[in-house]
Amino acid sequence: MNVFLAGASGFIGGYIKQAVKRAGHAVTVHNFSKLGTFLKLPPGIDLVVNSAGKLGGQGATSEELRAANVLLPITLGNECRKAGIPLIHLSTPGVTGLSANAAENSRYNPMGDYESTKVEAEKQLISNCPGVTILRPDFVFGPGDMHKFPLFRQVSKGWFPTVGYGSARTRPTDVRDVADAVLKSFPGKPLSKGIYNIGGPDVLSIKEVVECISVAMGKSVRFLPIPRFVFRTALMFGPLCPKALSRSRYHLFGMDRFSNTNKARKKGFVPSRSFSLTAIDAVNWYREQGFL
Image (tube, rainbow, N blue to C red; front, side, top):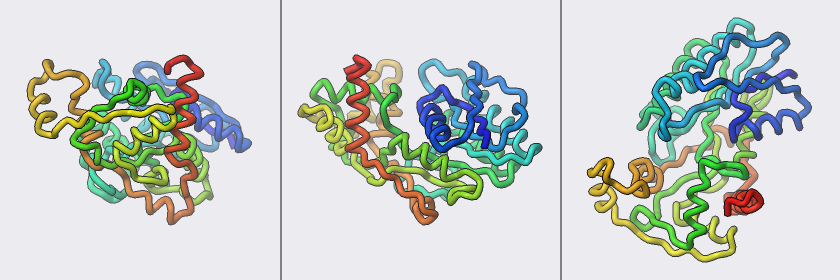
């Protein structure tokens, strides 16, 4: 099978590329430009996987977000529909908002620009690309992930600020399990067609996530609980608020946000990597690269 992979240069896309090749398939990659330029599929493609995406923040413009998160998947979907080719599209559980145990049929409730563009893409693909598979990976970690590196770097300092007592829960997911889920979404496989939340085997509190990272580093960490009212008050100061007390951090680390993965499990997809093992692999990679 010849697989067309969009976003192969990204963190998740790189692992998908490796997994697809190991499974014996050919991979044709598409690394989109800053504005996500894409015209048409090359000949001989049997399946399209879209792992491309643009996160918000860090100077990302609305045009860049729409190009990567809306226009590119819609264009791929149209091409797949015309050619009769299956499409696997990677989205995010954030489309249903930051809620606990959100399922695939939970109503759309995006909280930011990134999530809003992902919602728009999902709606368009569901409407215009029959048989599309949409995977929503939850809080992805793994070796090579620079987006989560600040979390590890903070733990390496020996102290970690938490919203309240760090009891908010999340579902850390190994990037290699995400790649496995993509393989299980190939035509004729258990996750082919439909929407599936993809998540790790355990729901952990933020404190437990940090403790797993500290154990992987072989050092202790002290927690600095920040009362919720202090967090909310600080956020009212806008640009004067310290970056460590960002609104996104408050939502991410201060509220239960984990997806319900029962639908994928009933189809036979069972993640195999606990976060304690993922943390060890990630720490080792950061050290090998000289980041820690």
